[in-house]
Amino acid sequence: MKMFNSEIENQLKEVFSKMVNDVTIALFTKEGECLTCEETRGYMQEVEALNDKIHLKEYDINKNQDLAKAYNVEMVPSIVILNDKEEYLGIKFNGIPAGHEINSFVPAILEVSGNQSAVPENLQSRIDNISKPTNIKVFITLSCPHCPGAVQKAHKLALSNKFIDAEMIEAQTFNDISNKFNVSSVPKIVINDQYELIGDQPIEAFLTEIEKN
Amino acid sequence: MELNLNYEKLNNNHKNELVNDKVYDLIIIGFGPAGINAFLYAKRKGLNVGIITKKIGGQVINTSVVDNYLGTKNINGEALIDQFTEHISEFDTPILENATVTYIKSINNHHEIHLTNGTFYKTRSVIIATGSKPRQLNIPGERDLLGKGVAYCAICDAPLFKGKDVVVAGGGNSAVEAVLDMVKVAKSVTLVHRSELRADKILVDQLYQNSEINIHLKTKILEVVGKDFMTGLKTKSANGESIIPSDGLFIEIGHIPNSDFIKDYLDVNNHGEILVDEKNRTNIKGIFACGDVTQIPYKQIIIAAADGAKAALCVNEYLNKDYIK
Image (cartoon, rainbow over all chains, first blue to last red; front, side, top):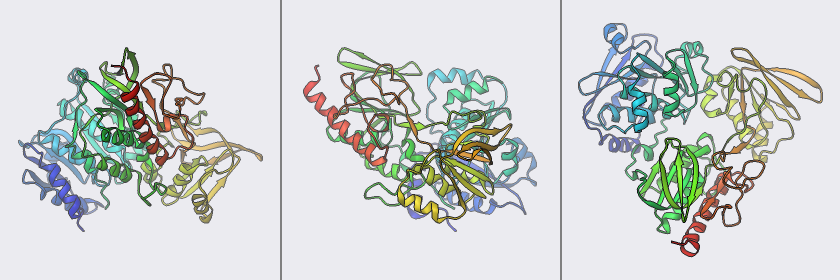
């Protein structure tokens, strides 16, 4: 079944018309047991069809292990957004970015394409000071209206500093990892598997936790 | 699978930056139903308006079903806000999002709105429409177990309690709506409230029609119990103290006004609500307030929106009649 009706399709076409450079969606799935892989594949194919600058490449987490490792892909389905040179900038979605999460997925494509929003000046220097590898996990549910805000901020940080890797994790699909991090309220932000924030926190709050590293 | 595309926000054609080198006619702080409607009315009067807000939409975003906004039946909160923002999309909308105001300074005939990042914006008049936030129980365990069972957003977190036992605290519309949302996914749902239900009859009827819902009225929650994760609640009723085993607690016991940043400057009542007169005027000339952040009773979307309209008209009158250039 199609994800987009004609109204949404036209709206998305208009939004994506603001893309600057090409973007590649690297979709990792696997053969066999994967509840949402098929649905995610169909969804991404529809997204690819919306604009000539969007390219979909499909990989199998088991058959393309080197690439999966390079992008730090550990679960499926996983969507990695690459720039026009097919470079990994630390932007990843684990699980289908449907429901409310389309509102973080679409801006991620726009931002990686080069249509970037500015980070406030007073925060840029704090972001620039981060010089250790930093992983940000943002646990979400698809019914959560606040979650895309938190995912967008994590991705913005990743785009602003090459040491930062930011990933959305859909909590229901990835039940085991959600339980490991005791996720019972979303958005839940976990930094380097250690420091935790609940809620759609401002970038300052992310930075305060990252600076503890 | 459902998609909740927020087209207005993604396609922000009409949005531009708030600037700090000019004096606005009006700056609206907060952009929920009250602020959005104030904006609509102020723009129609031709005022030069800026907006400073944490988020667009306010608390309505957390509501799964709104069924009491006249003319719009059975809509989810976010979709209602989309309709509001779509309505104003024809206007030039200078907006600063993710911004937190620290204080307002009034100098001669204008006001400076200062933010946490040190910048400030100038305006001839201000409407404060910052709404309110969920009230906490203020009991032991509540803060420590936040995100470990204790939650404030039923629509966000309901999927995480599939097959689990949950309690909803509160007796108003929000609490009953949360119970009705949770019962679709949880193994068991118990409503606990310290007095009688005060939700609309139409909702209470749905509550009693569902035999799977347990209801404990005249029951006070004393403590959230649990170490790494909540395991239950200690409660007290006429039958004495008892423990309700539970994996989650959704707190829906009303709201407190977002007036902390201004309560030393403006007159507020003992609930922290900004005191306004019938023309939305605060005690400081040129500063108006509307919606849930004020003492106006009955916190409802339609009341907040209507109050926003009134505040904008009052501002327009003030700028035309009373404002001294």
